Length: 123
Image (cartoon, rainbow, N blue to C red; front, side):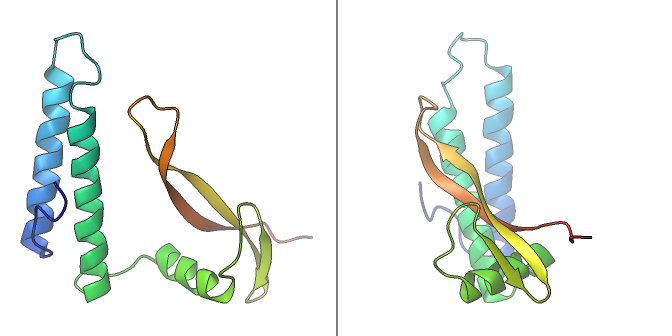
């Protein structure tokens, strides 16, 4: 299922439409099997993410301010771990993680979202 869509704006729209169709089909399913489309939906989400990241790397979609900040902080602090606090450009930031995808059982995290959260200024 990987690399199913071209790394173009049209490919991104196709991947998003495919994901929407799967989610709609899952929502209408009355088979009594809540996990019936789990694998396909997760694959479609990963494909949308892959194409989006590629388009951003190509400069066809702009990075958000938070993504640019995350990249700067990741470069400045490549060994930062979860909940590490750093000083950067006169502010404090904390490295944060949350589950991006989980196994079918939901017990194992298979990939993580990571970002830097600005901490409130001390008074």
